[in-house]
Amino acid sequence: MLGDIAFLLYVGHLIADFPLQTDHQAGHKALPGVAGWRANISHAATHVAVCATLLVLGAAVLGWSLPALPALTALLWIGVTHAVIDRRWPVAAWMRLARQSTWAANGGAAHVDQTAHIAALLVAALFLAA
Image (cartoon, rainbow, N blue to C red; front, side, top):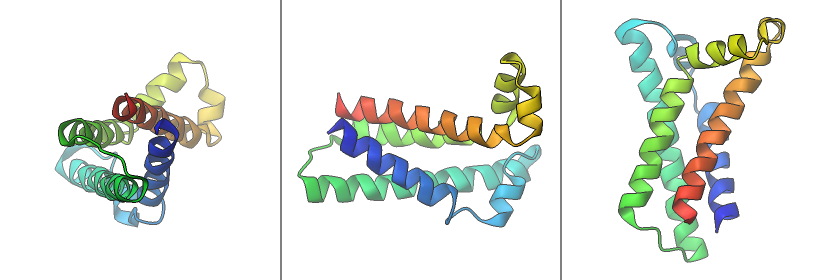
């Protein structure tokens, strides 16, 4: 079940992060203030909605019984962690700490960002599969 849940959450992440993310969200989600948070939260909400839809479909097709409270907790985790990671400062801080300034200046931040998102999804999948 862990593999199925992790796969569905990963696919949900890809759908929400790429084809469903608007130019406005991408360009504003890390800005300071209300406008930045509004874009950020709407993008994170898209992740929650897509992942919730895929979990419901997975449960229906594969016969899972996902209790509501753990599922809601995992979805909240996905939304909150996605919003925090997408503020960009956590990735920048990690890359400074890891002494990756050259890589950061050459496009590495996008890879670290995606790795952080996938790690958060794995935590949610482990929680749901437990």
